[in-house]
Image (cartoon, rainbow, N blue to C red; front, top):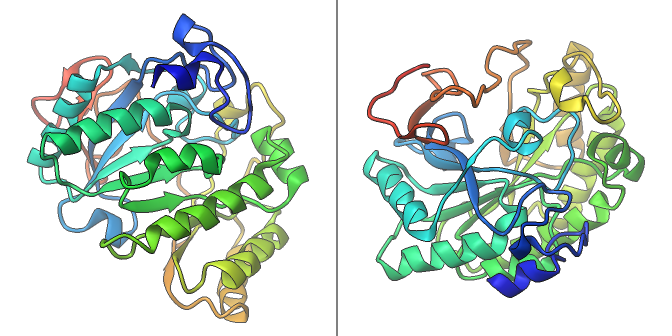
Length: 317
């Protein structure tokens, strides 16, 4: 694990910093694994949530710079706490004991070596919940190979196929090519999984970018329609704090006419299996990770929080 961080080339940023020595690259993280929150989440796609909730673990830091990130406090502002392998295992066990259907690792791309090591150690200690990888897909195939045989289910984004859009909003002009390669490799691994569906690809529709969504759906239909489910997300919400250091993204919700075009596009490309969110103009669901319960109580149940450790009850503050 240590070698991977010596001159870090894990992600497409290729920063080359020595994270073992405390240096940080684009992701803002050293070699130490930091977490922000862990608990049961009930707002994921039905196969992920199940009946007991998804055992979601939010990793601090991020190698993508989304200017509308709803989790900006942990992706941009480094909110989180260092955990050891034993502490990570204890968190996973507490989530399992709370009734979770799976362990859902959110935004762990920059911490793959540590997570792969800790998850392998958990398996060696007879931890049997399926592992779900929830990422932006801004990942190299070489890094994802470290997760082969560890991750059971995949929940990647496909944000855009437009390099200008990805450069403007994500500070990553190479996102389209990188993500497509990552998704195709994930699909290969998903075909070997005993858990179904083993892959769900998420796409967040951006205001003023329906043509971009059309291109994403066309690519999905041509490459993954028979290998994965598609989840079309319409929850785009302006987050001014997240875009403070980058170009400002659209400052409005989706319009009804933009939303109404989505079923037409899905039908055009023969995408029949998957999920599409209802259009709701509401920012109240945005999480606040300064709170032990960052989400509404109907969406989540906290188990562990970076500032207070294990949570004894479902407190809301």
